[in-house]
Image 1: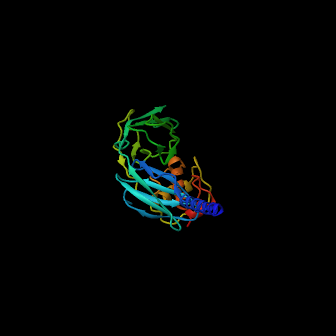
Image 2: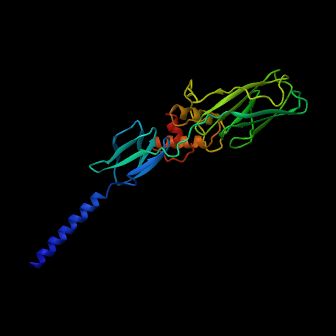
Image 3: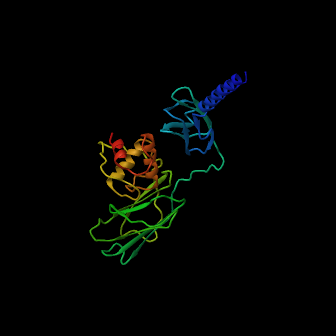
Length: 293
C-alpha cells in the first residue's frame, strides 16, 4: 500500500510540472505601458513558434505590428488600446497601452528671429567675402544657406547664431538668388527665399518666410535604384532619394537635405523593422534589396 501511494504521488508531480511548463511557455515582457503621443516602444515576446496580433481594440490611437520576437507599438492620439498577441496554437497574452498627457508641449513653428548680411571688402564686388548670419525662435536641425545655387557650409547649433560665407566671383547676376532652410526635429520649418544686390543694406530685415510645414511628400517621377552603402554623415544623391523614399512610405518626416543625419537613421530603423531586418540604422545589401523592390 505504501508503494502504491509513492507511485501516485510521483505521477501527480509529473502532471503539475508539465502544467507549469505549458503555462510559462508564452509570455510578454510588459502588460501595461504608458506612452506620450508620437512615442513608440518595443515589447519582447517569449516562447517558441510564430506570433500574430489577434486583436487591437483601438487601432486609431495605437499602431501595433510584430517584427520577429518583438511587438512594436506607437501612440498616435489620446486614448488607450488593448492589444492581444497569440502564439501559433492556443497561447495568448495582452498589453494595455494608454496615452499620458502630462508634459504635453505646444508646437511652435520655427521662424527667423534675426538675420544680417555683412561684407568684408566693397559690397557685391568681385573678391569680397559676404557673410550671412541668422537666428531662429526655437532650436532647429541641420539648417543650410544657399547662394547662387551653391549650398554653403553652415556653422551653429540650437537656435543659432548660424553663419555661412560666400566669396563674390563677379560672374553672378545683378540680383543673386539666396535661400535659408531650417526645420525642427519634427520637420516643421520654412524656406526663406530672397535676393542679394546693390540695393541691399546691412543689416536687412528678415523676409517673410514661405512656410512649408508640413513638408509635402515628394513623388519621384521614375523608380530609383539604390547601389551604395549609406550611414551617418553620408552626403550623396542616394541619401536624397533615400529620404524621399522613406517620406513616401510614411517613415521619415524631416527635410530633404541629402545629408544622412539622426532623423534619417531613425527612419531607416523603422523601415528595417517593418521588413524583418536588423534595425542597424545604416543601408547595407539587405536594406538596399528591400528598398529596390
